[in-house]
Image 1 (cartoon, rainbow over the protein chains, first blue to last red):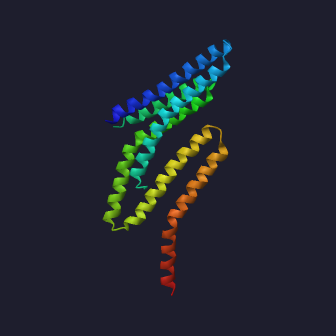
Image 2 (cartoon, chains in turn brown, red):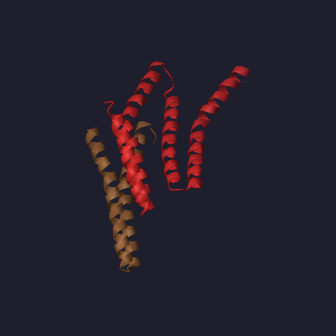
Amino acid sequence: MTEVCIAMSVDIIFKIAAIGILVSVLNHVLNRAGREEISMMVTLAGIVVVLLMVIDMISRLFNNVKSIFQLY
Amino acid sequence: MEIEVFQLVGLGIIAAILALVLKQHKAELSLFIAIAAGAIILLMVTGRLVAIVTVLDDMARRANLDQSHLSVVLKAIGIAYISEFGAQVCKDAGENSIASKIELGGKIIILSLTIPILVGLIEVILQVLT
């Protein structure tokens, strides 16, 4: 069960890296094309998507710690 | 079971390389990689943490220790765990002052948790003295 969990979690790191590279490439292309405002929106969208993924994981960590150490 | 350490180190190295690659172009997303890697590494060792806490609990019960005292110790460890995680993330983001404030807040919360025990200790001392 933990193996599956870890494999899924490592996937998330690769996903974040892929999103980051994609966003940076899109940024370059849009900046070259003279669309600075759209490139900023792309950056923002990438950050929001990644933030949603990371926050899910952090909440899982916090819940685990809360239940282990009886912090209520 | 002990193969976990290789997973841990491999995960850390891969995350460090990916964060380094992203740092030049998108520093904020490289911070997210660092946070995710930290959360995964801590989640990987929580299974062992459960075993350790269970053993401590068992030992305390066998020694007829007051359950509330052990619970305070565990709560202090948990708060330290979480606040250390938050402080490290802030330090990674270059916000050293916020990191030190998180640590200070965690210390104050731990202190407020331990005040009842301190009061109990002082009461015991007063009883002995009088």
